[in-house]
Length: 416
View (cartoon, one colour):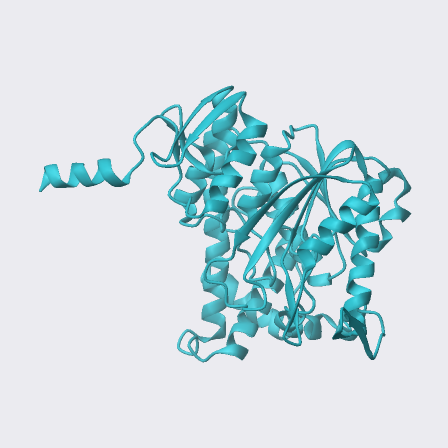
């Protein structure tokens, strides 16, 4: 039995000092590994059959950065440590704080940062920052970033992810009795706390709890307060794990700057002209995903006018009627969306330094049963405003429930 087990290990586990992570599952993962090693290693060779890599370069640096390898030079990578500690390839640190719709994978952000060769003195921008995947991942890697988003909940979540790693030891050590009191204070609209991070964290956990109860009865046995406490305990455990990893690896996290604003307003920040080393972003899919629906109860609690929020979305001006494109009928807002998207790309070009990198993650949408080639249009817009196209990687969304978007493309360009 022992010899059979060892033989199984030899057959199914990579044999070598520098090996793939078990999360490498698709052809896209091979492309992404090639992409990030091009920015991390001096030279490298990928063996997709043996699931190993031969490379030269600063192995300690690569071990702390790489997102696709489990071991480098026989030692465990930081990313593998995150995966093993949190039991997930993308829900480490505070990335899983709240189930915000339309998030993209932090592993993609890490890969792109590596492929661009960005160091701690770099500055990254995400003009469609959503709940802060780009800014949180950059902060964990010790790189400064700026995130801009138009949605109040997205901004609230992005700021929380940015602030939670800096809470002092013991700040989240609360008793069940404390948490019960907090839950009832929030319900009675009496909740207040001198630390804004803890104040907002409790609100977000409450919003997530109430939304869960509005959608399913499977939490009824726990009760709302019980589920609230369970969600808090999860965040507290995430904090403990992150602090332990930070100490073990000597990581230096940095704060991001999070702004509530419109991507079409970037030009008003006059000092941003040619300021950023890279832009990593994913424009929202307003025709395929209901971004406000999940946060409806939160906005009602906070007294935010949801119609005002929706009206500020990219392409969602008060346009009515239909337009015909290539003989196909679409709502007028679809055309406005792509006009606004092109304008936002012009502003990204303006904000990037010469030689700066742009990565846009997009997926083709379906409207009224008609597929819109968002990927091709976005690539064309990038080239029209002056970017040089560098590479496109298609990443399938395995197990995606949203049939309107079955995969995303990473469009990579450079400002000459």
